[in-house]
Length: 302
Image (cartoon, rainbow, N blue to C red; front, side, top):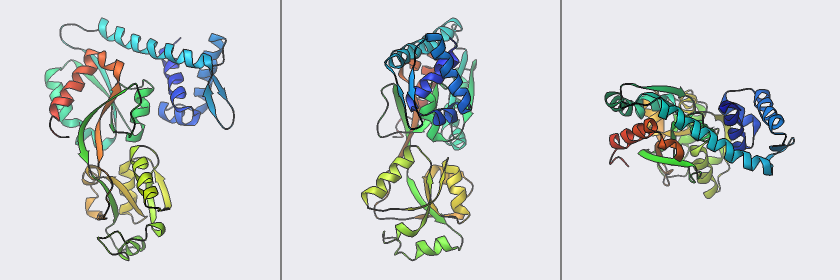
């Protein structure tokens, strides 16, 4: 069995959603389905029970998931052990948003390059909300992500910094801005239920915002659900609604002068940004070295 097929199965077993898995794996839904079918044909066992409404693991699927996890971890460890010598050499796969490449990773990679010049960094960029899923699916060694309220058992998280989550509105005169200004700023008397919101499609910030709305009995009018904080800031700057984004993204977006921060009485909790990796991946000298450099680089920041 190819490790790629095992990674596909692990992703589906974690998400229990073929469409979501296809997004994380950058494969078509049919390709994901064919991969699972081939595994089931090889094993002569059904691994997943699926219908139009749900997907769940069979008893054989639960057993095979443990096998797949162990096989991929052992393969990664063997490949790196055989390829290592006195000086660390090899490849570390990283996943992060475009903003995180220069606002979070830049000092880490600079320090890491000086101490381990023979290690290659394979960088993938995209919506930071996908980072944890990619790590759990075995697609990358390390991802930059916000810290979820509950960490999956297999996940290790290294906090690096905190960034305030900010409500932001268009800076230019427009109907949306006029709606915000009808409230008593700063003060929280904004008519939250009638303002068009641009919200995260998924991830830690979506969970945080949903909780904030729910605790205050707010039923927001959603204008758009967007993948990526950078896209949220861009849409807000165009006057399409108000949204939330980490302050570090707003400052790095190049559009900070085109959005205004909204001061509210009960602000959103800050986003803890850090590195995540599977615990077993940290047994690799390459991954552990990058992890340790990150810890030293951001020591005392959180």
